[in-house]
Length: 415
Ligand SMILES: Cc1cc2nc3c(=O)[nH]c(=O)nc-3n(C[C@H](O)[C@H](O)[C@H](O)COP(=O)(O)OP(=O)(O)OC[C@H]3O[C@@H](n4cnc5c(N)ncnc54)[C@H](O)[C@@H]3O)c2cc1C
Image 1 (cartoon, rainbow, N blue to C red):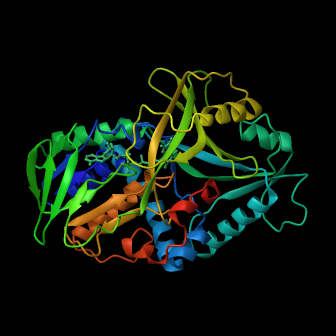
Image 2: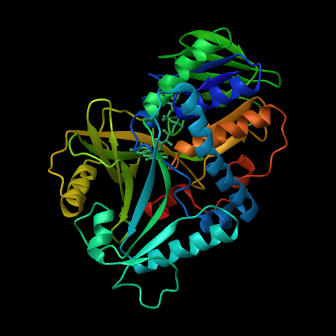
């Protein structure tokens, strides 16, 4: 079995397959493992998707949406167990995440979404309201002075009328990928290998196997899993086009980091109004505290070059938000970007290609992708192990009802 892509999707898929099968697993990584989106994210493990639960249900049907959200909740427990096996204690911080909302219309939508999740038997969040806002809004939850609400959001801007609190994890996924790879190498060196600087350029698919062209050599595998996120897919020669063709679009996300401050650790998200959205993670690193803030993003076409800043305004947008809301002193200690892959539904694709049985996918991060990478890995492992599976939003077939077009990607689809 060959896994193409050495980010969290690729390594989580390898980890699950190694546990549930006798397969020999080889991971091919074009650059260095964990240096894609996995090494450039906010580290927030969130049991959710960019689009809200009701929107997802309207695209894939309620049954698949409920199952998918259950799988995301299961992925949080899976992450906990995985970290217990591969990492040092404390690698995954369990924190209360808070999402501040300034706009009443958006808040009403979010409350409806939480209700729909609860009605479907899913875990949902708790809303805290500002005591001077929301006249007429029928919702349960504590009411607090705005200043206190802002303090809990680590915001000096008091425009937020409510926040939603939910369980979250904070994790350095680059570090996790390194730990998974060394764990698998030491547990089963005869069954697991990872090759860095090994771009898969060509996949030739037959009924029985996959021939992969990489670094001028040929490798044959029983099947292949594409975990390539928003990067261009390798050339695929097969009797019909691969299912993902034209369905994943590259989107670059931007972040800045401050290496001062102190605890508590935690995650925050902000909807200050309009389509803007920002998120913040504060975590102790081995040597320091890191406060990372992101939000702006923009699409690209063609091959991604990590040295090109595609949307230079992104950093000034972040600067304005940070000075008005967080009061951290600009410029930041670090700034960086990462490539994401948005699917046409905004939902990860995890499963077997409907027409090419030797080809599988666990790809398309859609902004919030850490837990869905694990959920996708678990689904693939169960599928290949012959287990019956409930239909889920992650199935390639679920895209049949796609409503969001590739050109329609915009930040309004954030949760
Ligand atoms: C700025 C930013 C902030 C984010 N914040 C969060 C967050 O807080 N919470 C959250 O849940 N998600 C977040 N995400 C999304 C999250 O990082 C991704 O969902 C996740 O890392 C995707 O992992 P992946 O393995 O699918 O992709 P990647 O980590 O991008 O890995 C794909 C790998 O495939 C390799 N590859 C591509 N083509 C080939 C080929 N032909 N041959 C071999 N290798 C190939 C690439 O080199 C790359 O290493 C964020 C993303 C960004 C960019």
